[in-house]
Length: 297
Image (cartoon, rainbow, N blue to C red):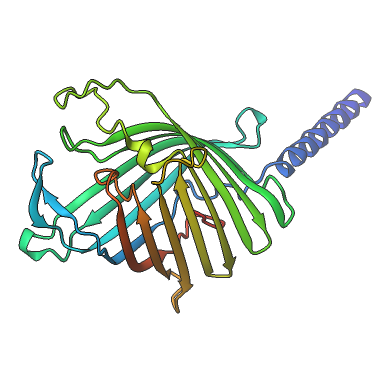
């Protein structure tokens, strides 16, 4: 009987130890992190009307400019999602994601030409990201390193695509936020042969859109505005790049906010990366219920 009591006591002690160990492990796991497997990545929005005073022309299938003016007003929308693959990879407190973003330009008001989609840019990417680095109200909040492919899905000669490594840093200062992106384009062969599918189809891309982007903004509840300057900031001799002003105002519906955008510069879309365009747009920023936190891009 004494042996049975000792065995029973040993089993109870072991069970207590296992339960205590399990509690310690559970306490270290953020069970709410990535609660939803499918999340928003960049902003999701619809711009119902985007007017440009810039005179632009339609192109043929051979990418030759015609004498027919393009409709000065068009719609635009962006869909952007991400999925977590690995949490706390290599104990780095960062997570690995794969993401997909699609940005489409729709000549919806061009009834004479059957309201075509003028251009769609596709952007798959994989990235490592860590958040809440500084838990105070000020300082670095997000660090992200990405490998990105962007393409318009067209064949030669209208094909536009490139690959890059991108680093993103976000800082907060109470109701203000600021940060930057810096990227390095992957080398591609260039032989100026439109029939060569492996040939770089936009070798001057970064000469027009630059290699860095800086932004600063203010947010209060559902109100937010952001000013973005993109260029080759390290080479001030290049006077290209772009300026974007985004203003978000709360609506009476929690599902969306009003969205106003002013764009001036190069790189609005891949097909027009070497054209300077000015555009005023109005639409809605869609609330992203699958993402827990603030959006800055």
